Amino acid sequence: MPTLAIQAKGLTKWFGEGSAKTTALRDVHLDTSFGEMVYIVGPSGSGKTTLLSVLSGILKPNSGSVSVEGVDIWNLTADQLADFRLHKIGFVFQDFHLFPRLNTAENVAIPLILRKNDWDESIHEASKYLEIVGLKGREHLPPVKLSGGEQQRVAIARAMIGQPDILIMDEPTASLDGDTGQSILKFVHDKILNSNRCIVVVTHDSRIYEFATRILNMEDGRLTGTEERAA
Amino acid sequence: MKGILKLAYKLLVNDRAKFTALLVGITFAVFLMMFVTSMFMGVLNHSSSTVINIGASIWVMDPAVQTIANTIGMPDYVLDAVRSMRGVKYAVPFYSGGALVKLPDGTYQAVTVIGLDDTSLFGRPELIQGKIEDIYGENAFIVVRDAEFSKLENPHIGSELELNDHRGVIVGIASVSTSGLFGIPTLYTTYERAIQYIPNPRYTISYVLVEPKSAADTQQIKQQVAALGYLALTKDEFMRRAAEFYTYQTGMGTNILIMTVISFIVGLSISAQTFYTFILENLERFGALKAIGTRSLELVGMILFQAAFTALTGYGLGVGLCTFLIFIARQRLPSYAAMLTYTNLLLAFVMVLIITAISSYVGIRRVLQIEPFDIFRG
Image 1: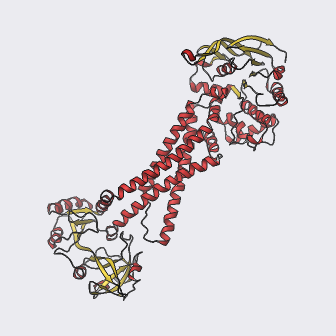
Image 2: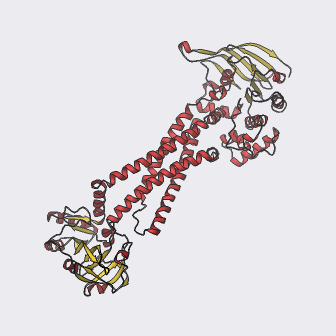
Image 3: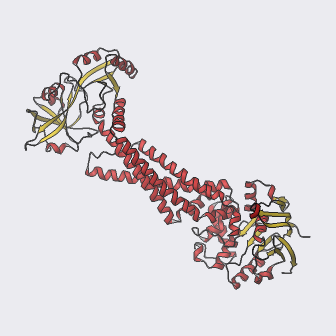
């Protein structure tokens, strides 16, 4: 039986007060296991990104709980939560959020540097991960010299260098053309997903559904359906 | 933390345009603050040049005297009274006054004439030409070779000059550590000759120079002099009195203060605004770092490091630029009245720290306000 990676119960989240109040999550329950590549799909404004943020310890829900590997993350202090994200979760942001003033290797090495690892060792490790994502020889280039797909690979290498148990990907193909998006997700599915890792992807790009092990549909802040797939 | 600071350093210096703008702002502010205050310190130093050059421990004067240049003659009994005071090792008369010298070409040049005690020659300058005993010769004067030396047509030993219809002969050329403030040459002679050559009111002693038996005697000497109706000041007190006079009673201090404040505001405006822009442009990156797992305190540390690094580099460049320009100015104007002191350096450093604190405060506030969720939302 697969081990639970994330267990969310009764998540509710709203923004604003009074007439401006908008409810983004309504009593969301969700379990994900290691070895799964779960997609959260749905129209814009359905609450996908809010759910992703709550699951990854970035946005506190108004009610409900999130356990990651058995730890109730919203009972942690701010510093403990930061450490938790640094050690347990890898993020791939929609716009990559690479640092234009750092070279590619330095960008990838950031999580290790934040873990207070030695600078040179972190850069050396980053070079290995760049090789894994197919960017060998690009270590010293600034991100702006790379194509969109290559930047996405750098972002993936940065997310993976700390060997997190959970990888969070927010609209990973939004800035990429169809072929590139597919190749990136295939790479993630084939090379990064394993039995000790859980990948949660928010997307509305149906061209990459083929790599999902499970697809969760969201509408109006609720999970409205689940589709199991044999990716 | 070392790696995080290196990260902060790279984020800062690799943004060359912003980093240059920040450095220019701080450097310019430090340069202006340093330059203005060093000019002020230089002027104050030059205004006390005679006090510095003579080097007496205690100066006895009329209580109305504010600076060395504004002397009020004291009667001879003051000298006798001081000599008889407890704790006084010795006391000598000192004359300081102005005169006009008629040059060989018929033109006149104002000079400062200093009359040294005939017996001890206490406060005599260091001679670079001639012998000090020649000062006892007929009509003898020693001229100081400073920036104003050429105004006496570069005299040499044996040169003659006319001072209040008296013949004067240069018997020595001296150097002093500090030139005067008013841009006029200085002549040394004996006290008796000085009061003989220069028309004076009834009382002729400008100051009584006192050497106490020990430093501990200074206070009781001051009290005894005060009981006599006069004022005794140590060398430092006299210099401070002159400094306070120029600072508070001539408007110079106010003008310098205004210039320093303007420099500070200019520096603060440029630096704080540029730093804030730098933070704004990197806000998403700071948000991403926060999302990845950087603690708030570490982000604060990064910003403080960036601000402090820029401030200290700008401070160093500003001080260097100021020093260089003063050096260049002194090559052409040896008596150029600008002086870098620890007070200047400290003042500019404190100003830079304030600029850094304000700049980083606005940046830190902004970065702490950003929610990592905003990064997800784009």
